[in-house]
Image 1 (cartoon, helix red, strand yellow):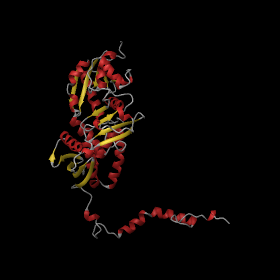
Image 2: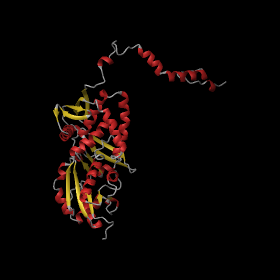
Image 3: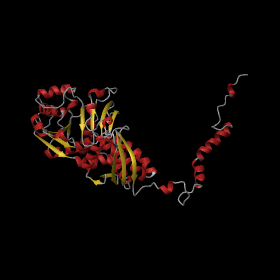
Image 4: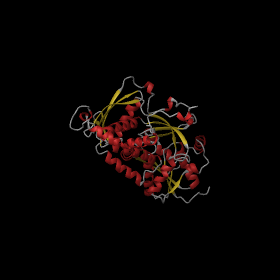
Length: 421
């Protein structure tokens, strides 16, 4: 078969899953090019075992594996968490912010290898194709982008399994276990299979990071998290690095069934899709951080930051990580986090997270200011003038209404016009 385009070397974002395993021989066969595979270690753990042998057996010339876990946490997870970014009320963006990091490293390897193209295994119906390609466009627009799912004749996971078998590519996916999953140290996502019908309850055996809340321990567990300028640093008084901290919270949260989310989300490409996510440690961090901000941020900053969180989530979800706006939002968030230092104590019990205590040296909550006692800071008599000024526009509007009709807004309806003679 003649090559589709003039491509000599391609760097493929490779996971070793069904789709990317098929892409290696497909690229060799259809583009007659060298294929260099790149796998980012983002905490998928056992999925990395035997990956190099598998890539080489599939036709790749080499495989790069880079441990990006700490960079993933400090440069992508923490900024998103501190921004309070949550997509459509539920999704903590575990897959979304992983893609720009993977694509960034893929571009670096392409430049190192002298490759003229990059490829990814995202489908033509999902969000990941946008996230990968926008990143490549932002960092090196000279690279060609190959998206096999938009070119080949494979249209289902069943087709992919047949293709893999025909090309002697070993895969772990089967027709019996057909879920499409994405795992990293932040979360585990599940799509496809029986989940495509939103009426179907997720099967319990599908979950891997969290226990069923009904089977969680009957005794609650207390967890204390210490933050410094918005960044979590200690759990129960023990200092931890980013990787150990996330792993510990995943362990604790998973044990208590915390962090399960079932969402029908609006994809960027225009369709809705159902995803079930497990984010035990991330859910704990988001809630703890929010509760600490309540005592550390002033009213205006907190309320404006809520709006920022919505926009930040949209940018991350849509693959617009490497944009001036995202960097500008990071600058705003950084200022808000200057005094978000303190401790949050939580109670975990059968899928729930309950706040039981928080403190900060920068807390704006002062018990002596909030009590009803008389003191120098707040004089209750001052409230009278404040209320009059605060309600002045409402008062003026009401007075104008009374002058026009002679009736106040609180009066009952006038039915006199409907009286019969």
